[in-house]
Amino acid sequence: MTDVTQAETAPAVGRWTPDGETAPEVTEDGVIGAIATVYDPEIPVNIYELGLIYAIELHDSGLVKVEMTLTAPNCPSAQELPIMVRDAVMKVGGVSDVTVDTVWDPPWDPSRMSDEARLALNMF
Image (cartoon, rainbow, N blue to C red; front, top):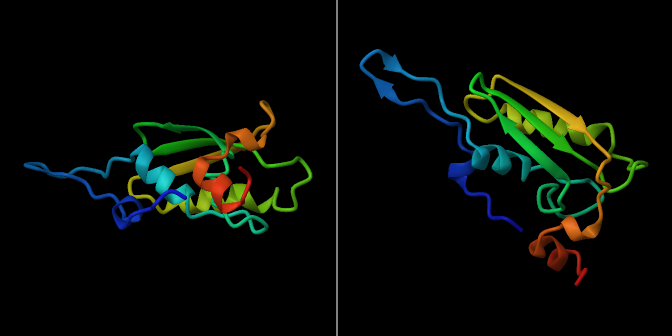
């Protein structure tokens, strides 16, 4: 599994300028670190390593858009996982809002998992 360091999950801080501190910059690594704290309740691997995150868009305004899928359309966690992702990403410094869209195309399959996830689930 991906090692999520404290630096990746710590709140971002702005930079000091002569006019004062700037707003924190949202980074993809920070967003991925936050998403990696979200686990499907039925699978002991975080959803990023499972390959459920299809796209992350960062906007200068602090808006983050996430496209994700689920392992199956009838996933029992279909309602709660997108909310968990939104809540995790909202904790990243500099994030003003998060939109999480669940998509079904392309359909998820085990080939999207990282090697770490396959090893954790004994799926080699």
